[in-house]
Image 1: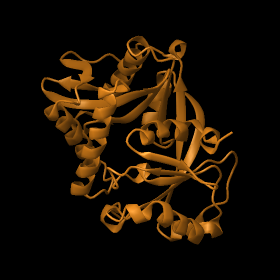
Image 2: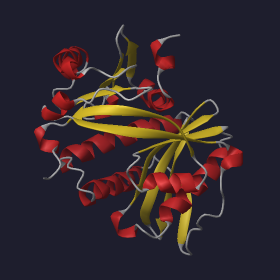
Image 3: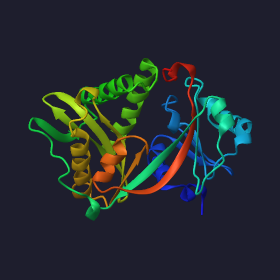
Image 4: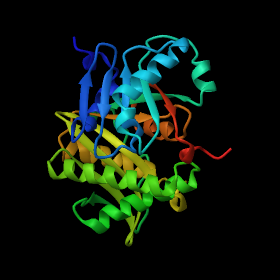
Length: 282
């Protein structure tokens, strides 16, 4: 079995996007992911390991990252190393002291018969629809929404660089949508985009991307209603057989997805070191 197929569901479905306009190559010790058109994309320019690194392996993996990724991403200056673990792994204390964030991601799966409908309806005046990413104004409204979320959530990413990153990401999603590989979906109130997400396919499997609600429109049930509508769209119009969503286990969004019937399927980890311009505020 090749290394990519041994990875957890979350990483495997991430590679749907990495392969489109990017490079995915196997080495003896890791999978190398590069997105030449977007060097600012941390997790589109990363190493993925099939097992956790050792705490005393930091110098080795920093050298491997620079050899495979860093030499191509000087504009960014990040380090991103993902890994799987089937059991409790050694704490990466020296990595944390060196400025790394170590975080867990949960992958959830949904089959058509598992969808719990009627969790939340969109209020009157709100409309769920497909966003035409070929239209520059609609694509810009998506980027504006994502940038507003970055600012409101104190994510720490330098605003101008983050906008460039999201513009490049949306260019790729637009190309994937044009190729028939998925749709970008959203909720509008009048002419304002208030929530959005992507849903892309690999055969009968659909993978969600970047579920976002504008900071001014949160806590109104819009995310729940949008994700439910997007699931129905995927099953009924895209003829998908299962849907995959990745989420932070400590954030409220995972409860929204589980309330709709998503079940936890796997988990994976990331070790990320940001450049100084992207540091979270203290």
